[in-house]
Image (cartoon, rainbow, N blue to C red):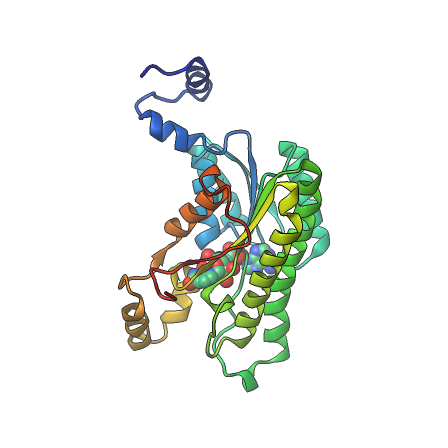
Length: 278
Ligand SMILES: NC(=O)c1ccc[n+]([C@@H]2O[C@H](COP(=O)([O-])OP(=O)(O)OC[C@H]3O[C@@H](n4cnc5c(N)ncnc54)[C@H](O)[C@@H]3O)[C@@H](O)[C@H]2O)c1
């Protein structure tokens, strides 16, 4: 099959070799003309998701509190022929979140996909040992941060009458998470906000979904396991697929959820866990 004139134009402007199949090109261009903000994109799942959106032609905003690593993520997308900028944002600060969304509109004209992924785990302790600081920090970032990001994105998307929001929850957002009480509380809230916004905003052409991973190999995932090899082996064995997930696998699931192949999915809390919660 011959490349269309639009394809040729794209290849010419991007100076890319036509040495890939049409199918690859479709995946490359899946999010052409769409923008995406990814919070927590300096590391782990967020970084992998930013790179994946970049590969698929999106105009990416890499956002995080870690500046150097965020610039590096944006640089990697650009080095691969994609478009990206880094905007430093603490999601627990509403003014910074509003500025993030405004800057997306200034740069790219619209906000098509908002990936609310920034999150923290605050160590392991039984309920009675959770300190006020641990509780408030976890809720401020994992729960209130997602709320601020959803609120700012929904205002823009309602005007646009289109948009996708993906919130990174967790298996700890649908079931128990022993010795992670604050984390479980924050992630259950994320699932609740996801479902509620999905019902409120579906009529505006906006889909709101959550993903619920178990252990994924990232700095956060590794921190759960590094202290105790025995627990790590036991947890890995409890996953039906007998391995932990990779950030790239979560990234591809997020892109699929934002894409037209998932056009009738709204309000789901999708496990990405090798069958762990099945
Ligand atoms: N890795 C896992 O096993 C796992 C499992 C389930 C859910 N999750 C969730 O996935 C998401 C990503 O986690 P990850 O595993 O990639 O961890 P990670 O630690 O590799 O990345 C988290 C990123 O969030 C950023 N961040 C932290 N506080 C922030 C703030 N206030 N504002 C903006 N950015 C901030 C960090 O700088 C970091 O870059 C989190 O919401 C986490 O709860 C992770």
